[in-house]
Image (cartoon, rainbow, N blue to C red; front, side):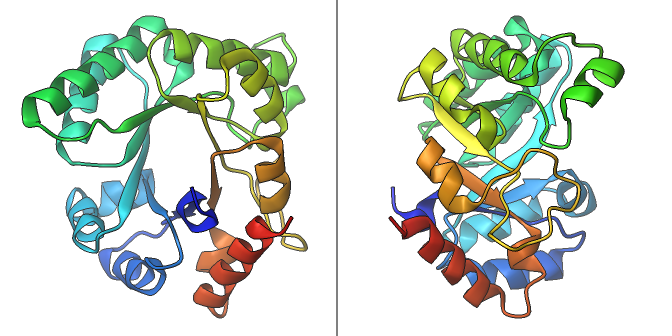
Length: 239
């Protein structure tokens, strides 16, 4: 994959017009557009249609987390929308993840379309060791818990995981070279880290072995988003 194809832009805006402007501006510089809870709740499936019509790829970032039958239905719906990838919370367990994987396969075969990639969300990049232990109640090192969830996701038939760049090497060792790793918590050198706790630069994340990197504010909020995206791609390509 080229650097552009690996770059995922977080469309964390709350209205159709803002999203459409960003897609029109950046579709030649970004490989995938991530549609999260804020935008999808506000605008619904027409956002997916708009991005698809622009001949761009969609990452539906709704982090499904419910009983297996409910997640199965959500996976069927996501597959019917024709998204490139979507995610589920790995902490929902093996049966829930398997239900999503099976539903996506069955639906894509039935419709004669390409199956979307399904990624398991491990530990959010806003969670550090203290939060994991004191608030989430998991008495393991972050890295250990992430690898545990990644192995569970792989065994359930998922294509990969969403994880901080700091866990990439350990996930790769545990799950193999063909297991997809998408990493948020990416900030170009010199940018503010905002609410992210476990971060890296784009170049560092790719060196660690990330397949996709997610960037939002450093492109969206830039004075010139196209130049910001171009500079990030240059950084990604730098040896």
